[in-house]
Length: 447
Image (cartoon, rainbow, N blue to C red; front, side, top):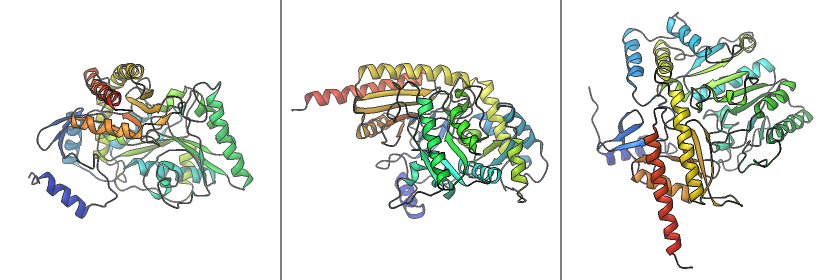
């Protein structure tokens, strides 16, 4: 039975009445009502098509028929919890592990990126017997209390909030506006030394570090690509302190970076984290996520004496969907598409940088790309208002894009992986038109 379709105004009124006011919508001045989606396109209640450059959750494309079919067919047969034996659970764990380094062999299935990162912290605390966590500035790891504490992207927004004494914030390894930039002779070592300094200061206060956690590429922090070798050096310091390295792949995993299946692999084959968390794209919109760790860490967690059980984690429907997502990535060569189209998008954006002074930096890997806008390329003054203006003007032309970073001045490209070169042409052409008009307006304004 199809639910009644409300007029947009009624939907807005009911949302204001019944949904928490801190739950925001995109384009709050004129929100879009989306009723269906296919591939890289979303459609409103009037049938207007929007190009989706935002949705890294619909990883293999909105409403992919193979994924929908897998979920529906399994739901017709059975959905239950993982205390019963079922082949989908072990088949999916086996397939997922095959994409990872050998020592990352034990899976815990949960339902969201937040659950995954919260469990990763529990694993680290239990294994090490330590409590302190080192996180990166501008990081975001989830919405539950344990993760708000280690997410400067969130807790910096809280008035009069005190940072937990067991949380230490390291410099974001940002080569564009960070402390150590592209002209630094060894930024990886410089940023890793900052982590080591935090470890030493914690020790001086009688604290011990359980974990260092980082998104393999910072997303909410502004599409930050850490320098090669940084994770290896950090891991060395953290391991010497008795801690573990947690790689958060919730935003960037499953082939999005193009050259590799996991973004942490960009650092080189000699780097293997102790724990990897994954979410968002894993189920193409179905709520599922996973924590993968070593046998040693998993055994320590078991030896705590507390059973771990998750009602929905690893259920047969979720695993069927997860298997279908892996099948589509492989069958449609979406990792290869991310490499090809992502490279093409980067080249188009670099041309915009050469043409428009407002475009300060282009950075990214595969279909994870950021364009940072600045009013002054020397002072790096964030062009926050201009970024927001571009987003709203693109929306008027039926293109959905977002801006993020600490100054909300980084245009973020993280579309479904079926995004094409034609899509890239269209969005960059529209950005070029918007920037060109802005320049003309500025020239015509009297001094």
